[in-house]
Length: 342
Ligand SMILES: *[C@@H]1O[C@H](CO)[C@@H](O)[C@H](O)[C@H]1NC(C)=O
Ligand SMILES: *[C@@H]1O[C@H](CO)[C@@H](O)[C@H](O)[C@H]1NC(C)=O
Ligand SMILES: *[C@@H]1O[C@H](CO)[C@@H](O)[C@H](O)[C@H]1NC(C)=O
Image (cartoon, rainbow, N blue to C red):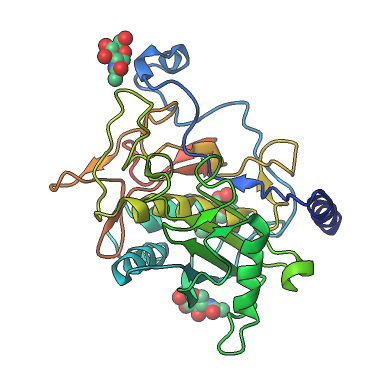
């Protein structure tokens, strides 16, 4: 079943020549901007246990593999990156399995992801580590990438003559991060990031990968939300980014989103909702725009505010982050470590 779906999916994507990686992050739910105006929100009342909860969410396990052994994230820094920006992103990824950080923590957020299992009952690994890192300072594939050229970038690093990226199909995540000058197909209009797997016909292997773009120049109001807001929505105010870099901190929540989905659905045949494997709704899609208790519609939910006025919801190594919640299939709603009732 797994190889059949996999095969059909690859075939579909190759035949159509415009593969749509199906696992994209959309900026926020397209609902009202005023919570008190919406009858659906009112229905749940102020003490709702709501955060995305619905009897209609049919998240299911489709028998494919998930990442149950120590997860390694290989990073490709595409374009121009400052060391301070790299540090924020590295510290976020390293925070995922650091239990020494006080709650609410990034590792507390990962606990929801760990609730997912495979056919054998093995949980998602608690350990996520950075593996190899590569720089592509001179935009080897240009400043405008397509979904297919993203795979070619990955190929060029796993086949590099010197220090190629290791081939780790079972527990490796190939994370391509593009700097603000780089446009990637559908960036800003439809997606801020996506995950998928590479095609053997292009790359030589089936490797789970994710792309996340820095939106600072192209669309901070879309992909850097809520640190920047779109001008066409009146009355919406941006919040202050905890590390002072809207582009990078917008990326952090998208990286969190993509990693959570990738490990629970690396070959797009494991955990997703909806009947269509071409357009699955995954564990982070179900909680888009929800950062705290009460979140839903266009309301972010209760977040935390630092003394410096910055908004965050989790502590990490040396710094704070704001990351969206993910779907908890045990209780059937979105959960996060900063929930008020924990
Ligand atoms: C939301 O709606 C309420 C009631 O209609 C109104 O008093 C309030 O000003 C609105 N808030 C925003 C941000 O539009
Ligand atoms: C997985 O990571 C843990 C925690 O860092 C470590 O103790 C363990 O040895 C690792 N296991 C393997 C198989 O590498
Ligand atoms: C593993 O998943 C099961 C089922 O969701 C859950 O009950 C259990 O707490 C999880 N274990 C860990 C270590 O997260």
